[in-house]
Amino acid sequence: MSDQPQRVFVTGGRGRLASLIADHFRAPAHHVELFSRVGAPGFRTNADLLRPGGLEGCATLLHLAWSTLPASSEAHPGSEERHDLPQLEQLLDALAAVPTRSRTHFVFFSTGGAVYGNAPGRPNREDDACAPVGRYGRAKLAAEQLIRARAERDGLPCTILRISNPYGYPVPKSRQQGLIAHALRCAVEGQSLTLWGDGRARKDFLYYTDFLSALELVVARRLCGVFNLAAGESHSVEEIIALVEAATEKKIRLTRTPAPTWDVQDSRLDNSRLAAATGWQPQVALAEGIRRAAAGYAGH
Image (cartoon, rainbow, N blue to C red; front, side, top):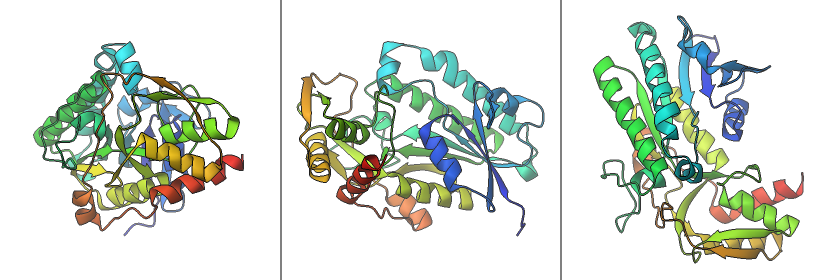
């Protein structure tokens, strides 16, 4: 085994999740390089990946870059078709150009709930038919289909991770995603939290250290295929609010609005395939994860 650090490239490098990954995959075992649309100190450009030799020495490419969230995808129809899918195709071309003996392991960050749509009365498994209810889920599914076709045609080592809702780290106030982070902020700062629907929508929430430990195993084993990366249990929005109020000892003021038609109301994910392939199991229960997140928020 080589003593040289494994080079890990991460697109979408300015995002908070990419920052957490970079901190986790640190030296001496790994050398992480972050990529973004615009270069800056600490960030290379996405275009660098597409240049001849741009992937030379890269053991793993973690592709987090994506131009939309579920809400913005609905607000700007076709954004993924104009930006994300063409960029993905270019990346796959570059990966296919790498000599077979030193192929880069490509890991695509998909979405759990949005790709599957509403659960069929039980947790969704990877071989279930996908029925996305919004543009974001349909675009991610189109990306998955492109990756799987190219992996089969060109012999590319590819992983698709259908990730639930990582939490436990701050997200910008303006970001239309991250229920737990927004609920904590509203509780601590005394602001109103906008609640979509009646609070009974169910989602899977995964503490970020569990997300990182699973990702580390996927990278170390060069695991290929499609895997749900999730806690394996779902909780209602009402439950989340109650747990945040208990952790902060503060009542959250709610502003209620109808649930968007594109928001999945019953997201349940089966994580047994990933567990069987790696031995991974999530370690942080939801109440404990929210307690830790609340303690971290109070400490800022």
